[in-house]
Image 1 (cartoon, rainbow, N blue to C red):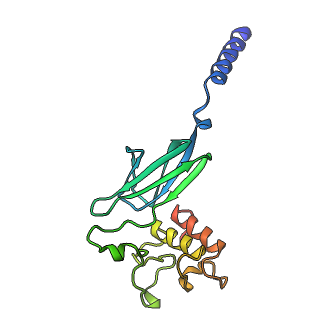
Image 2 (tube, one colour):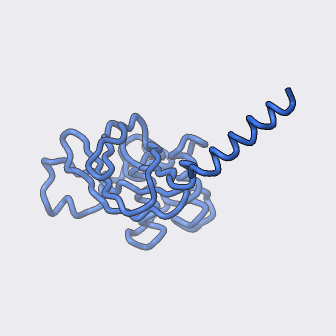
Image 3 (tube, rainbow, N blue to C red):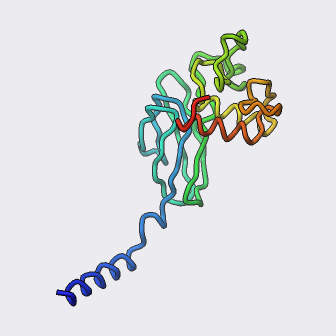
Length: 178
């Protein structure tokens, strides 16, 4: 009985050492997006987002990512995936009815009165820590857009610092509430 078990283990180990594991050729790819979007990789439907992000597995290499939502222009980005874990931000989905000039601006809603603000709702859409908020704090942290006090999520006196970016990321995946 013992010899049979050893032979079976040897056969399984040989089989698995010959065929490369899927984990060695695939990346855990996260798309930070808006609820209700469809995700395509190289023109092939990959998944539908029901929340602010989805995770799919994609082979290493260069891929064309397309995010679609009814009533919005498609978001298309070419990405090079060369790590086990990678991600892409869907910057903004622009409504089809928006003019070309407005489409080139970040999707930021008008500021509300201080008592109407929701912590972490940087784009003013009423949802804290969604993909749009994550994109805005990322842009503010790199100086691409101007940050105000709403971007100081950790109350350290610096708007859109690395601590604020980490808090927004954690909120966007549901780890914390802001």
